[in-house]
Amino acid sequence: MSYYDQHMHTHFSPDSAESFENYLEQTDGLLVTTEHLDYHDAYNGGVDTVLDYAAYTEKIDALNAIHEGRIRRGIEVGYTPESHARLTSYLEGKAFDVILLSVHQNGRYDYLQPIIDEMDPKAVMKEYFELCTEAVRQVDGANVFAHFDYGIRRLSVTVDDLREFEPALKRLLKEILTKEMALELNTRSMYEYKNADLYRYMIGLYLEMGGTRFSLGSDAHSVQKYRYHFDDALALLRELGVSELTLFNNRIAYTEPI
Image (cartoon, rainbow, N blue to C red):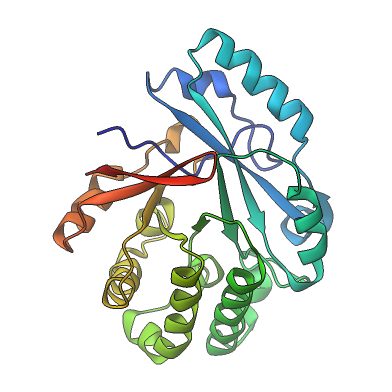
């Protein structure tokens, strides 16, 4: 199988210290890193997390010259309504192979911060899923919607809880389908945060609505998480009748069998 991890970070993201070189040692195939872009990044003390595109491109070009062009360029765009215009401006004229779209925060706090523990879980879920839907609707050109469960990782959410929000989840999936984006299986969400059952449910809804595009990403910030539990995620997809995964080259989709 020629499928590679489509969600990874290096030292070009502030929450990672990993190098391209260490990832390259893990495989003789293709790699892509998807570095963070989050304005007023609540998880990073409210500063702007902006990928240094020139340095990133220079590093990849230098490595590709000696590694047979094995590295592709990616970015993970963190949406807030307030940052929409700045995100659009940043992306203009820049060449990426894949753009992930995420919602990490609401402009005041990140959904992984302890403040979430003090809040009404259903209110958090409502706000988060509405923000996700808005993000997909507003941002053009993104290829993958990443970790649909990011905003509920700190909550004790069951499949029954998700069912209460099925109309909201279907609105999100409808926007994903309209934009011809892939739905990410984030394997750290599934197996480190123990949300595999939530993903099974979401995948089922997506398939019922006619979805076919799936992306597999570990969200690795170090080589220790590279291709994290990929075999388990692939087994789940096969069980649900999915036979291919979607990749992107120069933001053009193509598929690989699983």
